[in-house]
View 1: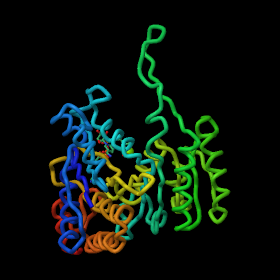
View 2 (view 1 turned 90 degrees about the horizontal axis):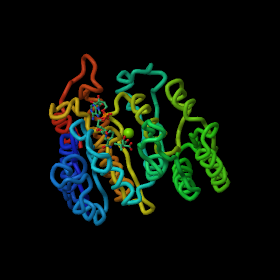
View 3 (view 1 turned 135 degrees about the vertical axis):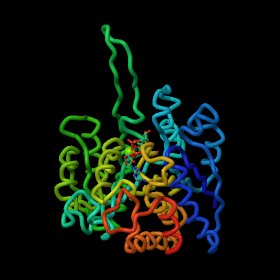
Length: 353
Ligand SMILES: NC(=O)c1ccc[n+]([C@@H]2O[C@H](COP(=O)([O-])OP(=O)(O)OC[C@H]3O[C@@H](n4cnc5c(N)ncnc54)[C@H](O)[C@@H]3O)[C@@H](O)[C@H]2O)c1
Ligand SMILES: CC(C)[C@H](C(=O)O)[C@@H](O)C(=O)O
Ligand SMILES: [Mg+2]
């Protein structure tokens, strides 16, 4: 088994270093895999002029799984769009066919006080957001900025084929089947034809899953309901853009965006694993970043790509243990806690593995 490790930019190298320490312990204890580093994002632009160079394309195509930190940063914001670090991330997702993005939002009981919501609103929260990842307005054409009638206009195209909707719907129904048999599909069918089709196809697909209760919600209401009463949700399925926004929103229910891992899977469960957050330039190189989302992404890799459920749980249990020992990075900290930096959080995880 080969794992490509793409640290990326900003806090990427700091959080990936802690995740790699965890993988190295598992390797010592008998799991068979090799780690191979590669460049993606701004660091790849610096080295090669491209955010997703050919050598990285080859590496990730041959690897069984990819572990990614985060890409992007203000230094690269003025580059032409095709050269931006984020374009590297979008290309890797598209190249590997990673259409199913699983973003679990789980509140660890110890962090009930870290959420900005009242503990009773969030305690016990366990939501799975299933985000379609290779379609939608992110990839649709035509797109651009051009002159029309003496002024600039910007335009993008929201587009989904029924096949794209059906395959992500199947993933979501199957996940709902293993959980509480409840699925909420989020769209904006009152305004957008593209999401009318989304609702129609998800409803058609539901006929194959009579044991799952399907509901639909408009995205503006869903954003509100996530804050009002998040525990009404179990599995949410939605498109690329709504999923991006709702998962950042859901992260704050759990205390911090530094806690949310993700898996991006193809048809065969080959996957890319990354925290949902970005490169956090405001705290880069300060030993402040929370590495837990990245470490939990390693657990997802072991579960979904390598079928190593025991090792996945071993990592998740060590996260629970360090939280119960009151170790906190500043994003989840409060008074009376054992405040630590990125590396020290990694030390605590290793000690409790
Ligand atoms: N998957 C990715 O690589 C990815 C995802 C999102 C954003 N980005 C890129 O990252 C850059 C910064 O974007 P942004 O500021 O909008 O979002 P961000 O997620 O990087 O940061 C938002 C806020 O959350 C904090 N934060 C994020 N991760 C944290 C962690 N692990 N521990 C503690 N605090 C954390 C940051 O300090 C910041 O205050 C942009 O270039 C953006 O395009 C990349
Ligand atoms: C950086 C960006 C392309 C990316 C997205 O929008 O998908 C990020 O926000 C994410 O959530 O992984
Ligand atoms: Mg995002």
